[in-house]
Length: 336
Image (tube, rainbow, N blue to C red; front, side, top):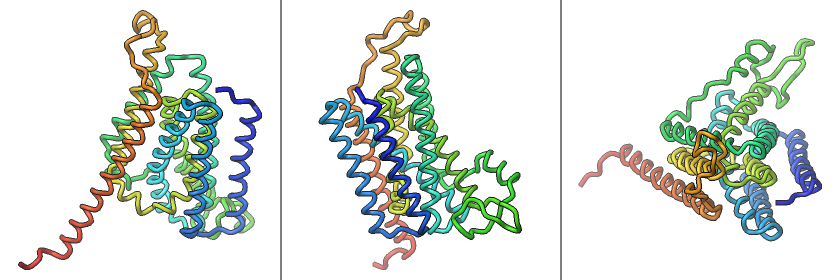
């Protein structure tokens, strides 16, 4: 895929302008967004992603267009899972609703920076070392097994990262939520606010999330430009999604299992690709493993859509069944 430097900088510039606009708007008027505001913004972001994917189809061909949609859906689904942790962080630090938008926005900006770094490192590694796909694949399979074993049972448990605990112990700060600022002046001294700690917690969490998401999308496309744009579009609507479906997240009881299957599938795809491109001397004498299947991107997209659809449907059915049982338990047996 031939992407000129102009297109790269234009893409980064437009994304930065959108984020800057958000920062200025939210910074001037911190508030809890209305449902209409959320639906409109989320519809715009999703619509732009679809239009961009169609543009890739038209100008670069079906292969790259399919890769973008597969990568975007995968990054979006992983981002939805990340919202569980965001909700727990906001609850743990008792962030007022009117300040949560700003915290999420800064967290998303940090996520884009971290992922941009990982994308560049991943692209350089793939370009020079074909065996890196073994590492990516093994890591995703390990993550998938770990996620499946946890099964979402410990979603309410959140342990502060070590760096956040360090900051809380060594930086003067107030525990009061007086504004959305990260630092304030108090008795002539500059001290940190709870917002600073929340931003650090979100930033570290985003860094850990990037360890899963970047190898996953490189299993679907090797084009850094598609990797970057898929991540941008997935993260752009994350803030609106946080407020819009906070209650719905609790009903996606099988989401962890679905994502485990998804990551496991992509991990196997990476391992098969690594075998197909093998250059390691201790595997097949350093020759390519010809029997290793190359899974077409069209199949990958179908599997991704199928996994997400089945996971969502089964989760909602299970939640409805659990709600009905709770109502029956509350009302007791009916008299015949």
